[in-house]
Image (cartoon, rainbow, N blue to C red; front, side, top):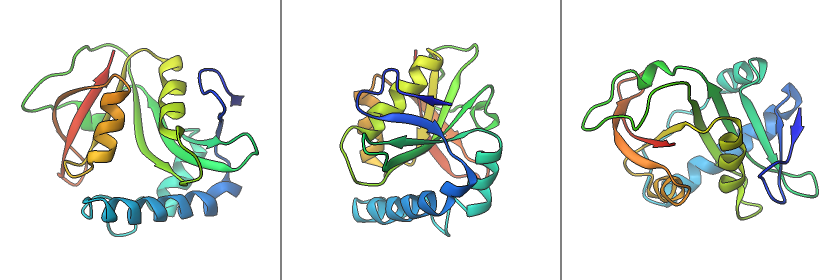
Length: 170
């Protein structure tokens, strides 16, 4: 399914297995970008793995943001439904319950500005209750989320027990 609604000059489409090498290059670039911008502790050890991304592609959860020329400008994972890591929140509370969508692993290829905004807008058009989380050192993502209307809600913990700042937009 290809869609452009709310995404301005970008087109959002579901990833296919043939995209995997491009996606892995984007995630490698994102790891370097985060480390260079004061966030060396997130996405370590080759995270996200090729196997994880291939499983997200198979589950239709991995998406690509393309520029007008068809170049892959970014990627993200979007899941609708309960996220088990969000069942416990500390030092705050969610703004609202009910059905929600979760944005994970948003990364840019560095080709164009506005990629994150396009991806978030696409998700917002799907469901008007979004959640996301990020590492305490990821000030770039924190600023993107806050600029996009997300509010900090508290702290959640990933599968490996690492704390993350939780955000919600309603």
